[in-house]
Image (cartoon, rainbow, N blue to C red; front, side, top):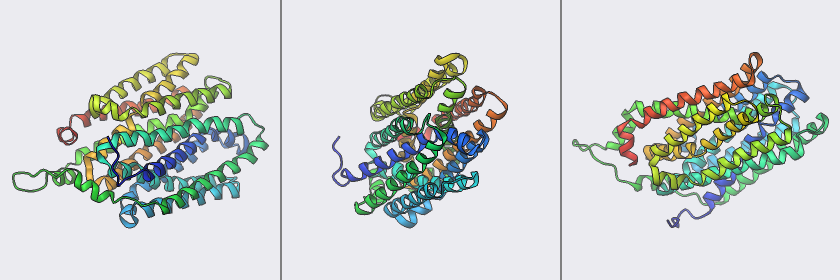
Length: 410
């Protein structure tokens, strides 16, 4: 399908680069626990708390996202929060944060900025071309996956296995580089022309009328509490599972399976290579199986992979967790395209709420895994993620049985 002339290439490129930086930053979290332990002597629970503050910032941002975008619009919201992200990363680099409180505060700040930027990217892009939402979101998250692949390989060369003093000198440079990325993206966003996505979304499909003449779309959006609650639960459980395993997968390989750092990084990168590649197939898969079919197939494969990782010993068990990450590749972009198309012109406020629920799940899972690791084995801690995903799956089938949703996206 030919890209609409009004959208052009600037918006997909800018949002893609933003998600690339997000992927690089998130993959960095897999290397920070070792640095916290060796340089600052933070325990696993404290490290998990720091990451929980990052997720809490994301949560707060998405709770406010609807108001922020309504007040400032897509362009100003994007640029202002890229500047906030850049300032936060620069402060981390320049202050050489030495206390857990400083790390928590600045991670909260950068998490908030990332939350607004991520919501703008995930909602503005599909609303600019709703008929291609699945394809655009697949490409967007492909760029994020590229960040997850490139980040670990770069960090393996620069900080992994290095003496503590050398790593302590390298990390501020890495954080300063993220600050530069944020400033450049803010500048790029200020120079491009952003489409009027609100007007476009309202023209995509005329609202159907009830017998009394009222809009069916308005009635569904404002009165159906069940879809709102179920989508919120879906995002809470799914993002909790993904973020928890993303942060703790590499430490799991090092501490529980005893893999060499280079091999652990390679397996981590391979897992995200598979996740990244499969995200390009979202649009084709949705056309073949529909939203419901893609979600149910991915969920089933993810459950099997978790069972593999939990019950198979040795390195093969570690591969099972990698297969879990690959199996969930298409869930988030499919679910987000599904949600944006369902809520239509209310997508900005609704998706802010759903992403807030997701990052609440991420904050809970990262802290819980770190806390449980203090009193139980790493594998038992990872079972928290498995439990969250099973709850997500149960909620998923509940959502798919809501007839109004199936009619809206059919």
